[in-house]
Length: 248
Image 1 (cartoon, rainbow, N blue to C red):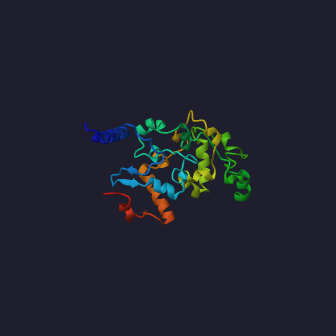
Image 2 (cartoon, one colour):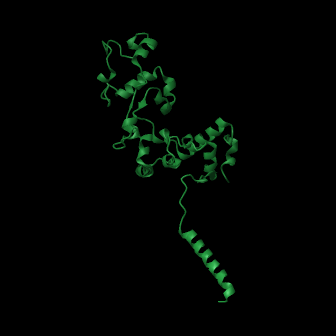
């Protein structure tokens, strides 16, 4: 090889090695993706994740509502899936960390927000039968749990059914909100939620099907994205603006 070509050969070799190394050694993936492709039969959506993070001042919890102060939240599609089927039931425990279990499988809740004295004095005007049975069934007012147990039997409904039926007769506005209305009375026990073992199924407390408790992917994204855009009066959110997000 002629000497004048030697530096060129060296430089070419270095560039070739650098190029090969770039292909063989992957870069560390960013915890926050720049863009996310959302496949959809109505037209794929390219979600500008990095731009939205900037708008929200790096507050992940604004969109990732179960993450609290977690700087590395799980992907929305881990919980909000296309179809809640047998595959989801089997595979979902492997999709995210155990710390996320309590987001859905809350171990316990109480009714600390319910105040008996306030109801008796302010709402029932000391008429106990407004909530309790009449004297033919309950000569003296007593705790509901004395007769109504966790599981119903014969003609005695369960404690949950009995209380909900009685409460709903006055608080139909709260019950009309479905799951969102639970917080008016129930408070989740955060200490017990730290234990993720022996989590009960949703159906142990909720009568609604899982797709009514957890929105599917489409419903979740439409509700979150369009709802935020409408609140901020920025970005597409009306039915006539589908093509602003969905590509043909």
